[in-house]
Image (tube, rainbow, N blue to C red; front, side):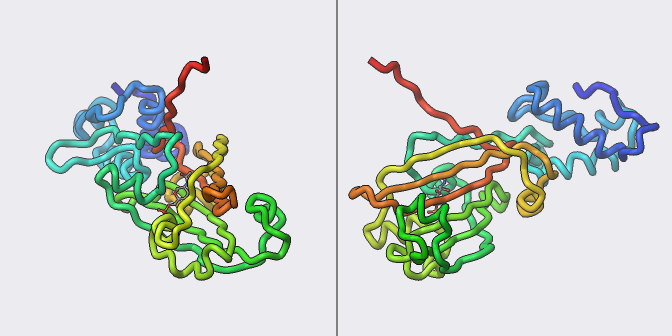
Length: 242
Ligand code: 16G
C-alpha cells in the first residue's frame, strides 16, 4: 500500500509527490512486477487527494514505462526487459524475439572522419572515413535507449542504407559481427538524453559500449548506448571456472 506521505504544505504539486511515492514503491519492491495498482478511487480516498491528481501521477508513470494500463483490467507494474549479456544479438532481433515491435527514430546518419576515439576503437588510421548512426531505439513505441554506432566506411559505405537494423545490412553483405567486447557502466541520465527518452532528468541510466569484430578480428562496430535504467535488466549465466 502507498502510505500517506503527501504533504500539502510542500510547494511540489501533489501529483508529483504521488508520482515519486509510487516510483519509490516500485523501486524498493513494495510493488512488484505485474502487481496491480490499487484503483484510482482507492488511492484517492486513502491519500485524500482528488482522482485527477492520481490520474496525472499514474499517466506520467505509464509514459515513463513503469506502469502499464491493460484495458478493462487495471494498471500494473510494468515488467522489465531481460537481456542476456552473453549473446551477440541485435536490438531488432532482441525486441522481436519478445513479440514486440522495434522501431527507430533517427537523429543522424552521416559519414565523417574518424575521431581519435573512433580510430582507436576501430583500429583505423586517423582521418579514415566512418559511417555514423545515431538513433533512438524503441520497443512498442517506447523509447528505451539512445545509440551511437560508428562503422568503418569501407564496411558501410552508405549509412542511409540502414533503414532499421544495422546487423541485417551487415548480414546481407557477409559482415555480421562474430565476437564483441562490451562494457557496462552506471550513469545518471544526461539532460539531453532524458529529453529524447521522455524520462525525468537525473534518473538512473546504463551506459553500454560495444566493440564488435569480424571472424578475421577486424573491428566492425563501435557503439555507445545509453539505456533507461528503469526498464532493463541485463542478465548473465555464470559457470564455475574449473
Ligand atoms: C544492439 C547493440 C548495438 C548494435 C545493435 C544493432 C547493445 C548494447 N548494443 O543495440 O551494438 O549496433 O544492437 O541492432 O546490445 P540493429 O541491427 O537492430 O540495428
